[in-house]
Figure 1: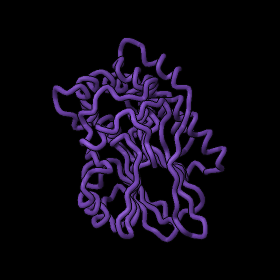
Figure 2: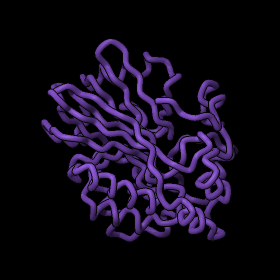
Figure 3: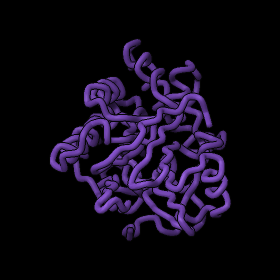
Figure 4: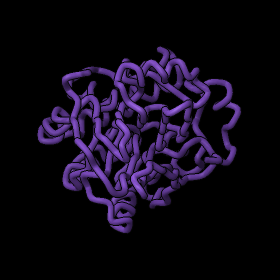
Length: 275
């Protein structure tokens, strides 16, 4: 097991799961209100990484997240920022549209973050583990082996199974791919709650998160959509420094391209997500 793993021990009650805040302060504010309404303690609110990303308020977002005292692992963006790297580490193909967009938003985010925020990012663990409803749970970003690995529902199960084997976990909470899904095989559950910083390519501006519950000491979960002030997020992104295409996605719910997606997920662009 990686030495930079935060072990929360045995936890109980509702657990709020989300990923990819992407510097979207308005979405984060709305999600915190969900936690308050659901009586979910900050320490039971867990992010799969990439607190920083495409949107216009990186410093304000990281400060708000830190003040909330929610939990998070590092995403590839946090790893690159804490190391002072020149790119986001997303493994986008050089010359692709996503690669070109990252040449705009990543330096913007890097230039806006204070030393205090970078120091906070440096404290985030690579993984979080805990016991919940008698099951061992591991939180990863892309995969246990590669922070930037894209694993989708259509990705071969064997690629996921190796993560269960390596971590000795029964539940893996993952992020990075930007789409919510869950998949079970035998007694293993792979759960991606989705991201709150960008829509899920389904043609709607709402974003996704999930809630775990342990009623009668049995694990259950539900995916949820989140509405927030996306019009403000869109307006703030139109600053001449960030990709206009990402600002448009905030409103339309449609990704500019599907170059990172497998065929099954690409063909689902604009379709309602059924979970």
